[in-house]
Amino acid sequence: MTPEQQDRVFEAFSQADAATARDFGGTGLGLTITKTFCRMMGGDVTLTSEPGKGTNFIIRLPTEVREPDAESAAPLDSIAARLNTEGKAVLVIDDDADTRQVLKRFLNRKGFPVECASSGEEGLRLARELHPMAILLDVMMPGMDGWAVLSTLKSEPEVRDIPVVMLTIVDDKNLGYALGATDYMIKPVDRDRLTEILAKFRNVPPPRSALVIDDEEPARKMLTQILEKERWNVVQAENGLVALERIAKERPDLILLDLMMPKMNGYQFLAELRKHDEWRSIPIIVVTARDMSTEERIALDGYVEKVLPKHALTEDALLTEIQDLIAACVKAKQPAQNKQSI
Image 1 (cartoon, rainbow, N blue to C red):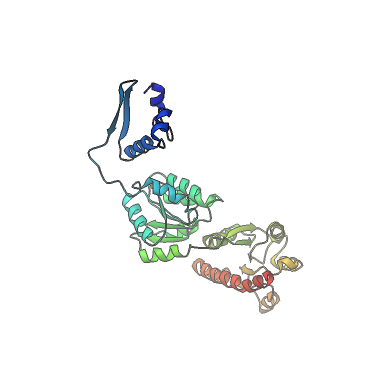
Image 2: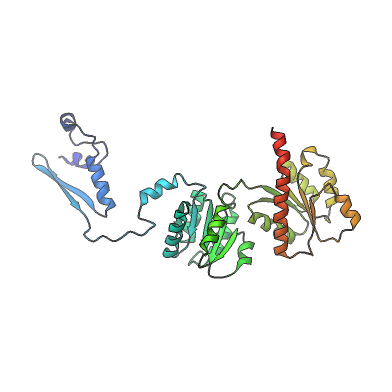
């Protein structure tokens, strides 16, 4: 073969001599497939040729073969799987290869597609590319640790709603929840509980929206963290006037309202809200530090779903109470929505 023919002999659908194709047929894929298989086995195929004399093809393969690790054993399968697992896969981020392999095998048996990352940086890249159903995140990693990864995830709108389950040998649940983790598990992982946690994320409805209205920034932050943990999109307002502007731009599914605020307090806000028919059905939960009289509670009857005193509840109790109320409000609201759509 001439040098020009040698350059293209391994190209797909190409043959060195068109006359050969006419005389003997063929697709021009044989050498392409051969070279691909050789490289998959860690080897290669080369050639030497002289026009008018002949051609020698040389295949070189390694004589010692080691078992590939679980994460690279089937690269073609992995690439094909990624095309069909956006929003369905579980992303495991852990620097320990054994942990990644054990979790991947276990979750695969439970029917979860799994992608793995060995570092925080790689985990963030895959989270942005794949938008996984959930992320299992190790805390203790070199370089970018789990807390840094979690903070970054929750700061980016395109991935902030992905549920993150922290896996660690250190019991620091409060920090995990404060940074936006959905759940927290101590190693060694309880497999049954992990399965239950991940099962909740299958076919999860899109995140709902909530408006938190409070003039105290720490209170707004605390309530926002509680809601975001349950995959709510949260908008904040420091008084009733700002809240009305927020609602005019986007109607929330739930409002958490403080009563004592400057410029427009909670009572004035409720009165203005009632003037708009399309806003009257928004569930409202009052969260206040004020000791309310019976008369004040009666005055709110029919306007709000529940009144919660800030000072009488611990943070954990408040979290539980709000979660229950959110579920009750959404459930109570559902029949009315269905009736409108009929």
